[in-house]
Length: 597
Image (cartoon, rainbow, N blue to C red; front, side, top):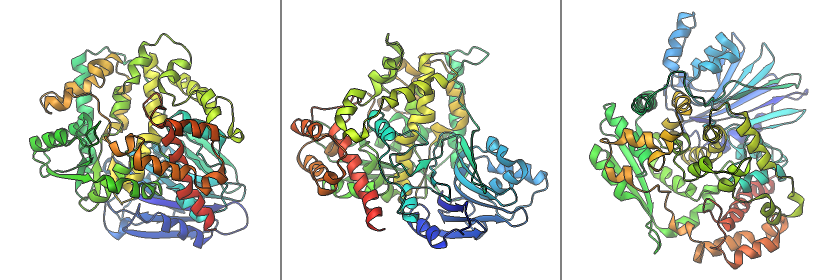
């Protein structure tokens, strides 16, 4: 797990070593253990390392194969690298390291870009192929690892974060992309790749690779798609439960085994993370470290779920760590968390992951986390509403999911950012592109391969890696996703959602954890738009920077301010917070980059 960056020139200029080192410096917290760079000809690569597998210097990056003219920077973990290594040795390849980085390099040497079909894991990497005069950028199937780039006729810059790109070149176009802004305010801050909210920065699509040739030409290709059709042989509920149990157990064990450092679990107290603890126990793990975070209560809501996480930790005898964050720490550290978001996020529990990761990183370097279970196994309340809706067309999706209808978006932003209803068109196209048997199959496939990537997957990556902590997500294992996508929707939606996971959990977890009402990360101090939190948002939205930017329609802002707790999205998010969160992100990241130019 690391931070990567680089530059490729398409003109007569050479890569700027100082630029690469500025990007590397901005990635230091993603890779605090060591750094390296490699420049040859028209290409330069930079790397910050978080040492997880093969802790020796032999696994340092950039990794170079001088004989073949190949060099690599890689962020992520390849879970099947031991098997691939044996296959490559049998084909005559020799290895000097024992980790997964060199396996990617040798796999590319042996199979070219077809090696992507063989890699099982989470990854974003760049391979410079001197003999063929090209650089390849690649990203894992569901976008667990991020990869951003800025490209014009003269040069390509790429990096693990937008902040690193802006540090490398503060002149990158940071004006707002109206198409992306429409996505942002319709899809809970999700801007599907390749766009970002900044015109000059794009991101590589999941399950894709891009080839940047030295003559300036570019190719983009997909190497994996998720089908959601029933298997050829019908399976009953017991068979499905056994199959999912086996696949999930394998996924958990794989993410435990592939590490040369201890692995912990972020234990929220929900069924997803609790089941990870149970399955690790099934795998024979003892002395497991688990971590939970909670906040101060509000009159309307309890601020922690320790009663559930404590019960799981006690049952399995984990070394459990509870972290209670005082309300007085939440707002002061919120801007700090936003400085580590590669893109703006609306989910208020981002600061919770940020603060928890700070503490956890002092104990372990790797954790397993339960993200993805709701999207893969139908855990959210809007899924059955979509499934049983009599509405047809895009409204069947949008009336249960979109934060704002198009008409309200036009009221929200300044007229400079008015556009067509591009979010509806995008989601409709994504749904139609899925090979599926039923409507909900399409919805879940789009969620898993597109929407989840920018929330919550990106949130977990950004907030954990801000402290040099690797988060592994077993519910987003390639084989598990492919299996679950073929499961009938009724086995997901039964029992209030995630039925098959609840069946697996019986006897492994306390019934109180399994049968509890679906919970969301409790952050009362940010959920209720009043007091210090409201004043905090006023300071953001009415400061000179916000006024100069003029992003929002003042009439709409005043409307929300008049009744700050009355204006909620369909998923019960604060519309006022959405405006403040985007403006805060721009102030913390874009304005500071421009000021430093």
